[in-house]
Image (cartoon, rainbow, N blue to C red):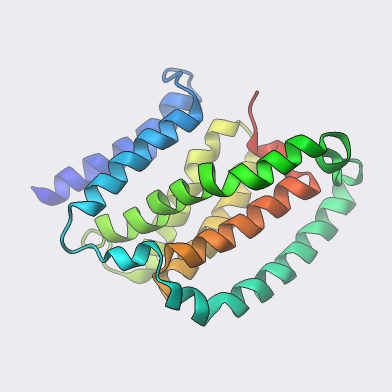
Length: 207
């Protein structure tokens, strides 16, 4: 019975909610929807005695893996920059040049309003809540990545979904290795701020 409840919950949170937004049935502001989901997931985790709350920060996980996170990010950023420069050179750093204050606001607010809630939901919550449904660590990583990518259908473009599957897989691997939301949130922030800075942020915005 518990597994059935978990399956229904997963379908509601990670399939139905994005589809309701995509088809313009749920018309609440996206940040408000994210906040509501974050509060719900935080509540479920907090009242679960089996959830190790140290995973919310776990500074040791960050200390032990920050070098590989930074090195991996450096290589990825060089590769993405080259590809983006080849295909859309006119978009490079367009927001930094044309809207520096908007860019600065994104850099400051994005980690707090977007990264932390998403990592709590798509890494912390999924890995803990559905651990008995998907006992394999590999399956948990793919489940996290797929759910993370699927929610980005709300931006109505393929690059957002493809990019976030790759990023989601990377973040899920990091969380699996570190068991630290602090570590994976740092990684998510690095990639996210980088994408907004070079111009790829246009795929993650709906006016």
